[in-house]
Image (cartoon, rainbow, N blue to C red; front, side, top):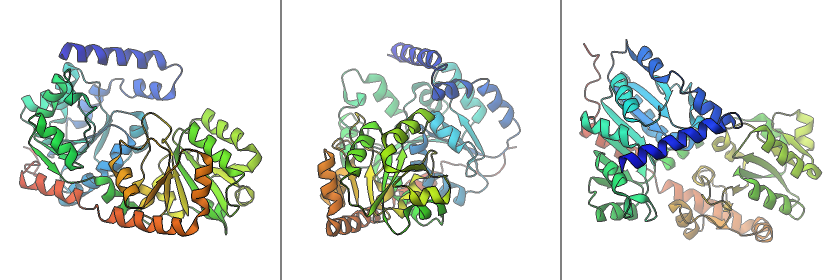
Amino acid sequence: MALLYDTGLFLYATAIRIAAPFKEKARLFIRGRRHLLKEIQVRLSEEKRTRVWIHCASLGEFEQGRPVIEAIRKMHPDLCIVLTFFSPSGYEVKKDYSGADYVFYLPLDTCRNAEKFISYIDPACALFVKYEFWYHYLATLHQKQIPAVLFSAIFQVRHPFFKWYGRLHRKMLGYYKHIFVQDDYSAELLKKININNVSVTGDTRFDRAVQVAATERQYPSIVQFKGDRKLLIAGSTWTDDELLLKQSMDEAPARYKLLVVPHETDESHIQQIKELFKDNRVCLWDDTPHALQQSEVCIVNTIGHLSFLYRYADAVWIGGGFTKTGIHNIIEPAVYGAPVCFGPNYKRYREAIEMLSAGGAHTVSDSRQFIDWLNNEKALLRSGSNAKQYVLAQLGATKSITDYLEAEKCFFSTEKKL
């Protein structure tokens, strides 16, 4: 099974190299890993503090893990925090994140890379966020008796851990000292395969959403664009979402302006959106004040701002509901009391199901249903209030996780090594 894993990883790396001349993300993936292990060795060679390694796949997982990272920093300011990312969309945005002492790409998961990386990092413990299962890294941590903890995880029966061919994946689960899951269903699935070192603590994204909402950050350009109108924010949109929004613009209530924050912000996609909305007076969010005030549609062409921008929303469309993977983060707008709507592919997401049940969200299949939703102002106000109440009732995962880490002495000593 390990041979199949290694073969699959080799083929993945080969595909990335083939795509690199044509895809910016692939180029960054390759470029960011050149001489990476040597760089890590050199930069950490004089580091004497006790280290904790925290790994996130991408930007979304980072935001999920951020409350835990910052809680650890607050409790143990003398710890050295090493943060890694697998994806360029996380590393390139957060490579200068001040909450960590070192930020790196994660070298590809080969036996050699894992052995070298962990010997250079020499962590007291390793924390992984949500969906991170790298066989050689976990096996090496286990061999060296370095505790590994997974948090904010969620499991579904479709995952390979619960299939006849999932022996290697089940082995990886066994390498974790403890697993913190979001819901009871995940814990029950793990129990069926004899993984019992599990705690149900919820999702740290709720804690992070409250932190963001309490952070003072103003966007004058959005205030100028909105003016005295209501603002519909479309977050993390894909092409199908943008087509629905375009179909809706002509019939949507005239009191609304539209702010589009696409999931992909490469130049070609931004140009595609501008062309789609060319009849609606479209601008970019860094345009002149006059252009912002005169436009009906505004496009945000950079990443990292969406969770803060939602504070300006009177209604929110969440993208991804027409894709195979499903909707993006609905917690971020809900914390502000914004009514949330999304497409039909949401059933993989616990918070979406629960928020729909609580009357804090709405789902539609076409532009006609979406316009009807926007036109019902009383229902929108009620939905926004329910959404916020739902988020506030989910807090506390971060404290449960850090309480465990403290009780188990996962950080050992924060004194400098001799």
